[in-house]
Image (cartoon, helix red, strand yellow):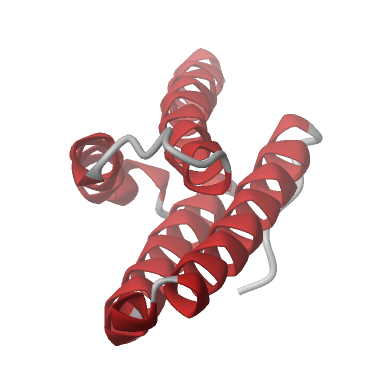
Length: 121
């Protein structure tokens, strides 16, 4: 039982680190001029990809999927809206809305993880 508890505690720590890294970038995307770049997201992505197998069979598994899916969707949306930057204001508005949605998803995941709840997949 101690091994399972230690495993869940470790997964929770990894989850908090990953969610915080995602949140820093998401909030920076909403605040003008505070973009953090993709480096922090890549660190969070690598952490999630490496530690995801450790979460198989636990309630943390859904959180790894949630974060990875969120990052994939946000990345695709940012790429698709790059041409809007040629029009400046529509590009800024699109990225701001995407970033708000990103913040929402990360906060929702953090709240549910802290409550010990799974994410809907």
